[in-house]
Length: 567
Image (cartoon, rainbow, N blue to C red; front, side, top):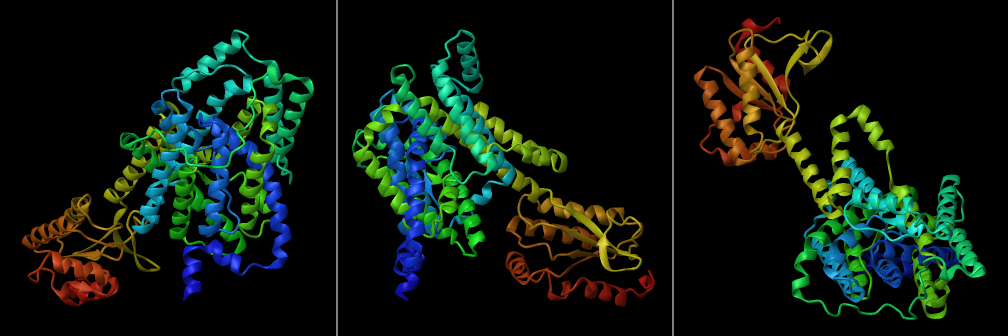
């Protein structure tokens, strides 16, 4: 009993209690390999979010340790992410008023609120919430984020001052600065070289992450050539471990961050769950989505309390852990400890790390999430979904990251409502040589049984589509080639009904009865039939109106109207 509870609530602890000695070597090696990537990546994503570089390492160390206790995935790496960086910047920097200390505190509050939303979602059983983002919408907003990141980091890669404004204004400012000869060629050489190494390493499938040699080579070049005064550098890190950094914020700061925190909670849970399930599928394990939400929430809260910012599952660093042989979350604990040791023992080493190289790290990650193939494929196969993808992309890129996410969610809901309001609906007919009843649109040669209309509506009935359904049945009756005696609803696709739709159904029954048409139902699910009986009491829809199969309904009609036999 206690073991099941432990496995359900703290999978990492349960895994540690059943740890195999043979896993220790691979976990230690993977932890060492991973730590070499975590330092520059954490610093780069913090800089992309407009925060001091050390906060990226705090947001690396703390979530890794929290997820190692609560996370259901054995090898997922949690930490700062390129797709979250512009969202954090958009939420925090306008409120920080130019103060780094206040920006750090607000970023911590944002992570804390994000974690609270996730934990509340876990308690309310709202793991389904990720369904609000369809794949085209997710690809669209990620492409938009990638464009924002690429345009935003380009000035740092070029060693010039960036400009504010929307993506067009920033791009124009960068082009203008380049045209005026402001490019720092040394910074561009280091950053551009690092970007080429990272991208080439990814494309060639190298087992050694390109980030590591790119960062090491650029730091060595900066030190040997004495360029630390020539190119902008990250500077030395403070020799401190994660600590509370929420000073100076109050209740008034909570309200403007609630919306961004909710959006980040949705995005990070969707991305982390997708990554966790992909990893579980490869190893034949099973991941509890609810526990994933709880673990992510705990990691966000811990990050916010100890100087970090919102984090997500990393699609770039998790493969490093997997390829390095990680067996359990002990590898991530080792990596977190080594990152902390680096901050305590070698904090001055980063004074040789060019900012253009940090920009290259972020831009490489943005290129990785840029997905134009899906847009091309959808443009050929599903133009409507391609339009939704473009709308989400343009919303994020040109309206704003947080506003664009709201647009993406709204579009997802609009698509859902449209599909429910306007589902496939048809008449069923007999087709020569094919048993059963079939879609009249697909089989225009099909034969109708005289006096009988069979209608199908492929959606649950609710307030938005009740009238659409009843209009469909009336239209079939009106268009019938001869007098109609029965209208049978093939009700197997009707998975639900609400009071508004039930009232519409009752009105349809009255209209048809006045015209001498009997309304009947075939294959209606028991729960739907029970709900209809509760919503329309008084025996309007008597039991004899319901048939277990469509064939039994047609057979009863033919028995009562033998003149229709033979068709």
